[in-house]
Image 1 (tube, rainbow, N blue to C red):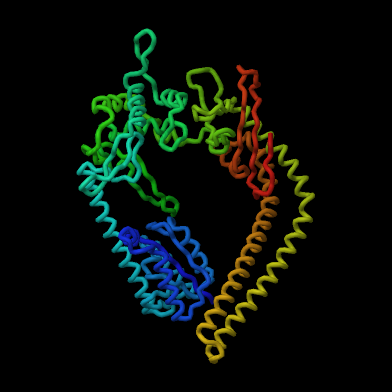
Image 2 (image 1 turned 45 degrees about the vertical axis):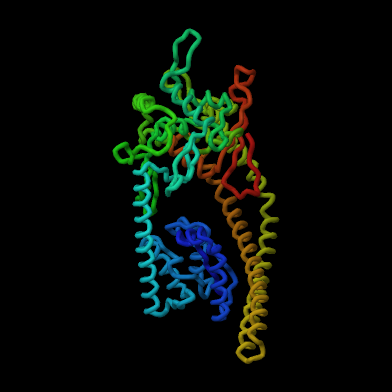
Length: 533
């Protein structure tokens, strides 16, 4: 069986590259290729991990490797040291250890070959993972202490500078600080002035603007954001509560909180209270006065955001489903608490020209569209099913033929090893033939994987065809009797991926209340067309 190679950078490697020691993955690849030559390992795949994540969940290449090891695809994995495989918590380490043990997959390093069938090798491997985790925790603890110390000195330790500033290196000192960008600083002053003092009216009085009105004003003035997009309410709120603009440095405001939910690790970044943060005087120049910042905090406290329980209660059957056809944002349900009007469906972006509609009109149109699509789909399925079955049979025959070719190539590779042992082939000739066969095996394997993926997709498509019809029929039959908006939303999401909404003209501009277009995207393979309504 073939071997593969796993390459991954660590923080120490990044520091070494900064010192000019060369690109890490290239150096490790060269060293492991020499190991494969000495050990006569038939390496057919090289995995390169360019992210340095703590957990397996943050390393997609590692997830793919573990999946293939679990399936017994490799005889062994070449790696610089076992610490490169897992530096996460005991759960991650256990997953890695058990995956290699139960699949009987070897781990080959330049210093040692770990055989999971050997009890002593297994203990040594687990001890290596434990020590790597301990080393990671020590390094991380030292880094965090250094960051807090830098913050208390007034330095800016985050990677991205806030709007209004750029990040600059300190002269004759370690660390970074902030430097004002004049054009953006003027926008920050305008935001605070509009929120605390208000804009000057023709009669000499001032009218204070709320966050939403400030968003509209900046978008109307075509003021660009840091990334060049439109201003939104959340961005203005974050600016108004960020003490960096009055010369402070804030740390630990959005720290990570990990918890288990239904057996899954969930990582959240809630906003901390003022008491939980580290707030000190910064080395950078302030844009606004501390008095104006404190006044903004006082005004913000009088208009707090909605409670979490209320904010995350599903009140719209279309929540998360309807996409704005102009800007691509999620459409939201807008109630009118102080007016005797029904709720509407609107795009929350103030700069978007998509016209809102009455929510009940959109909801009914979605149901009508599903009903019409269902009738058309029944007819389409009946016509295409025989043709699809014939094509699926051809693909299965092709997969069987490719599997036979792969078995023949594996036998040829065994013969090459026999010829090397008999002295017919030199080492150079053996490596040359081994590479050629490895390329052919890899190509055959890729072709086989591709056609097996197509077969699986066809099977999923057929299963979807058989299941989608009763699901949509059931939804249309019981929708009006469902108890609440969440139940309706769950059922709609089970049959729809998204609904794209577009409306050009409102009633005042000569349009009609229901003059909008919806494009429904059922939960089917992408080769099938969406339904318009």
